[in-house]
Amino acid sequence: MILTDEFRVERVASHQLHDLRRRVLRNDDAALYHPDARDDEVTSIHFGGLLGDRLVVSASFFPSSPPMNPTLVTYQLRYMATDFDVQGRGYGALVLAVAEDELRTLGAQQIWANGRDTALGFYRAVGWLSVEGSEHLSPETQLPHTVIFKRLDDDAQF
Ligand SMILES: CC(C)(COP(=O)(O)OP(=O)(O)OC[C@H]1O[C@@H](n2cnc3c(N)ncnc32)[C@H](O)[C@@H]1OP(=O)(O)O)[C@@H](O)C(=O)NCCC(=O)NCCS
Image 1 (cartoon, rainbow, N blue to C red):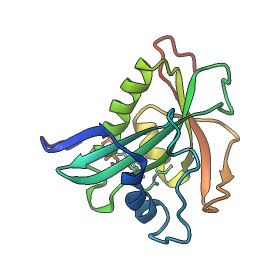
Image 2: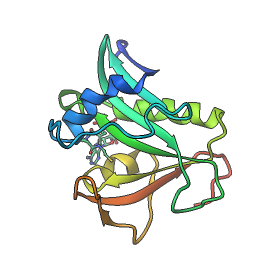
Image 3: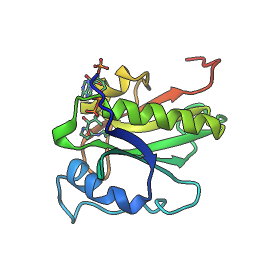
Image 4: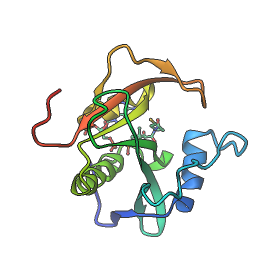
């Protein structure tokens, strides 16, 4: 994992993430990219990874009842993306680590996502687990996804 002094993680406004989300997650096709209906709700939390003024990582969290452990306080991660030329430098992992710390302080016990199958290795590397039998095609992209989650509380029972 390579981290440099110039990389930092901040809370950002949703509009700062649209360009990166569209390019990395929707093949730079404006017709395929729509802001999330929950983007500007007060309970939504957006994190950006920045190199100087350039936003290179996006991660958005929305309070959400998950398909597993529904009694836990849970946020759904959506729009996890690292810009193409800086993937593999540890930036995505760092953004999630900062986000998890902040969400924990807000009382979150669990985070979950519909993870792209091509990205499952990333999520596994940073401690997420897959829900067996949850494989599905995303209705938005038609790409294979799997439900994944991570417990954030100390007495996590997997
Ligand atoms: C998946 C993605 C967000 C990972 O971000 P990143 O900044 O490149 O990841 P990092 O450099 O922080 O990687 C952290 C660890 O995950 C591993 N990893 C990253 N992407 C991986 C992948 N696709 N498959 C397997 N392992 C992967 C890294 O090797 C690293 O492991 P290490 O700690 O053992 O060295 C990024 O590749 C991306 O934006 N992909 C395209 C969009 C996408 O699929 N987003 C997820 C939607 S659910």
